[in-house]
Amino acid sequence: MGNCFARKTVTKRPVTKRLQNQQKGPNSSNRWARVRSSRKDKLDDSLLQEQALAAAILFRQHQQQNGGASLPFDRSASLRYPNSSSGSKKAGQLPRSSSSNDLMRQAQIFLYANGNDHPPTAIDLDKSLLRDLLFNQSPSKDVALASVSMRPIPFAPVLEKLSLSDMKYGSVRRFYVETPEDNAIPVVLQESMINSSPPEKVFRLKGADHSPFFSKPQALHKLFVEISKLPSP
Image (cartoon, rainbow, N blue to C red; front, side, top):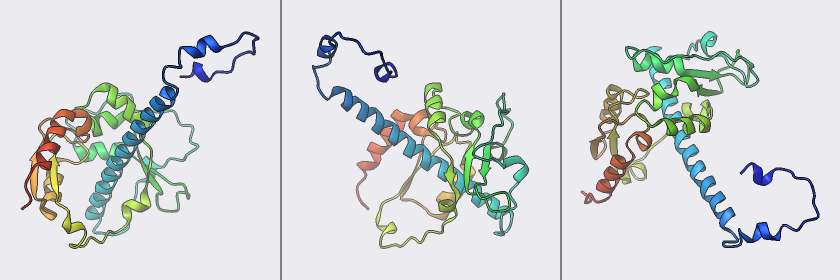
């Protein structure tokens, strides 16, 4: 793709022969570009939602540990600025004995666009720890693509309180797919979420990490088909 749009020197020779090979489908190039773009957008949206969920869980854990008070963020460990030129990165992966909470704390990067005297404005994750945290059972090629696509998550929406009603939210059937190998939201925390707001039914996706659409796509699709065929209560 890069060569197609590279600047070339102007020549007198006509380029009709080169173009004739592409006349089979006048809009084929644009069509494939749109398909690739839409796929990337869908992936970005999905990853954005996953990051936001992880950030929300992290914030809730901090709140519980601090009795609901304002968060004493560790700025020495997480202070980063958009124009930072720091090139230091963690070279190795965490040992398997590390807990999910420790892994999340090491991976989190709070961004302070308004200065370190104000609350954080966004949360990011250390790219070197993404595999262990979100994609520990996912294929390497998917992890590489996801790592490039992920962006910082604004903090304000994560802190926003939601008001859910039985008339609207309660009218939609809800199911939960449990991911046993999830290092971002451990099974214990998943069960706590399930108990606090019980769904209609819980499914367990064996071998799935935090991103089952990467680690167990066929099994996840099978579950979705099964859910779609469940009769209404």
